[in-house]
Amino acid sequence: QVQLVESGGGLVQAGGSLRLSCAASGRTFSGYVMGWFRQAPGKEREFVSSIVWNGGRTGYADSVKGRFVISRDNSKNTVYLQMNSLKPEDTAVYYCAARFVVAKDFNYWGQGTQVTVSS
Picture 1 (spheres, rainbow, N blue to C red):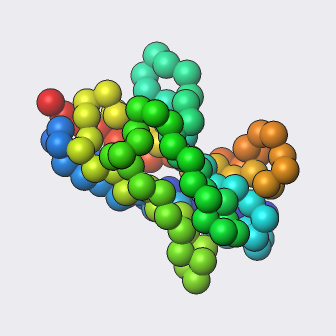
Picture 2 (picture 1 turned 180 degrees about the vertical axis):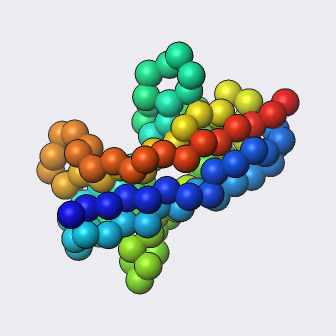
């Protein structure tokens, strides 16, 4: 059974940094795309970033480009989201997700971790 467990959220001042982790287990993730999404209060969930487990190709939402960096550690089966120059509008619950590379939708989700950026 696939499990994705996020950690690393918290409260930080604007301009600060946080690193989120997503520990993945339950299968081999070779051939999968790992993603980070976020949902702010009263808003729909939105894509933040993704990484292809094999090869490491990455993608970012325009709102985080240049500030966030996604990476993975194959030996630890863990995906990271380094978030720098945080803004109050980055406040949200951040979710880790996974899908097979040819699948349209992400079908595995973590429970989420809260990130709050104070002004």
